[in-house]
Image (cartoon, rainbow, N blue to C red; front, side, top):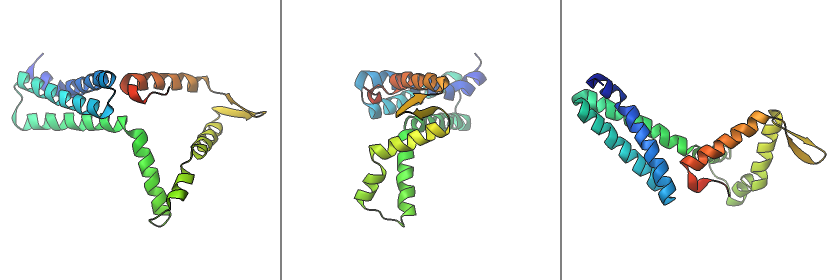
Length: 164
């Protein structure tokens, strides 16, 4: 592989190492925070190693490292989407309430019943579930396949967060 190709693929190599190390450390330690840091550090080291091999220094080397860091950040945000969406929702609730809200009111808005109710309404509106004679029925086989695929991916990437 030429030096130009090595330099061009260095951020992707770093991202691949990042993901693999994150998965391995997550399974070994059951500590997601540690696995994310270990993956990012390993990916950064891999990117730098490819740059050294390609003799890519200077401004191009800086651009390659910044590109890797941007990819690593995207992977990190992907891993934290569920937490981030909840934070944004809470901030919107606070904004809509004029900047403050009681703990009791906030707890009522985030009860298990409230979450379940919202999800069921969305799934029914999308014709993925239907309610008949007091029971919920699956209407979308592709949804079941998607759910099982996501569970498998969650088990591989975030083993400590899988549902028991």
